[in-house]
Image (cartoon, rainbow, N blue to C red; front, side):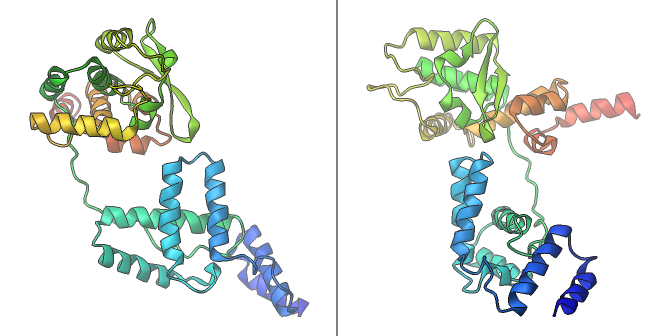
Length: 322
């Protein structure tokens, strides 16, 4: 038996990593000697719980963890066998059925694929499975739509339509800094340095970074803070008592409402972020610096946010090529 295991390991050596070979050896010894593997007692949902704990430790937000849990739990509910027996073809079939049943876009189904892939990659890295069945399931090609930004005229319309200092300060801060909506609502008054026109925000993975705002934003922020009568440390609070910290949904609803009143298409917090990135690149800011301002770990992500002005492309071509 020992010799048979040795030959199997030699035959598989070119296909497996060192950790995978060790895992295979343990499994072969356990099965051929009728020993019970330590992983046999773990259910599929046990693996999901451990995966979520690992992601939580890595700094994933509650929203991301919830998305992981929902997506992967739905997958696991479709398989009765142990997770290590799930095949590539079975997952392909699941994704195809998911798209048909839910009538979802290619972007949505690719997000589902990425979440499932993260789960199986983690299982492989932790040696719970020999090889992830997701390795041969590649990114789903999607049509890249040109996303809109907020024009100079539209931003002035939004400013003029504000009937309170808070909304005006929110619009200016989003427009000049490009911070995420979650970062905005977590800000406290003490986080703002008016002298340097900067503030420290807590981004994804609890990573702190400095962002900067313009003089107009400074004036509107100071006007809003000086006119408040509450003692809440939060930078933005509700308009009515008890003046609680403003929530993400509160900002989203207010901006959407302002956009509808003015007939401006799809006004939401993320559109301000994309607009800021586009304006910065359009005016010549190096992409690496835009990446730092937005808090992106990968520069490719920054490029997805920014729309390069076609007029500038034409001018650059004439300058450098023609």
